[in-house]
Image (tube, rainbow, N blue to C red; front, side, top):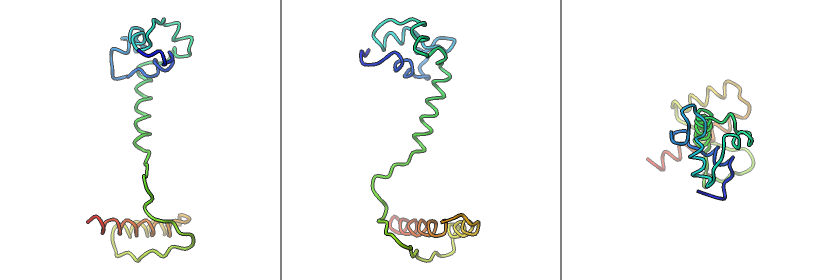
Length: 132
C-alpha cells in the first residue's frame, strides 16, 4: 500500500505474470489495485484515467518490450582505449574469419568501414591476447 502512487502508476505497474492482478477477462483486478493503492477504486475510476483498454495482454507486451530494450542497451563503464584524432594505423591482421569478414564489408563499400573495422579487429586481437 502506498499513498505516493497514482492510480495510473498502480494500474500500469500490475504484473501480467501475477494472475491475482487481473480478472478472468484480462482487466485490472480492482481488489489488487485497492490493496496496492490503499483505497477502493471503481472500473469507472480506471476508465476515467484513460486506462479502459489496459489489459493483461497489453501489460505483457509492455513488459516484454521493456525487457528487450534493456537487453539491447549496452553500458560501458570505462573506455576501452583513448581516442586520438587523425588517421589510425591498425596492426596487420593474419588471415582469419574475422579478417575475411572485415574484407567483405570493406569491399561492399560501406563508408568509413575500413578504418573502423580494422581498428575494432586490432582491439579484439589485443583483448584476446590479454585474456587468453
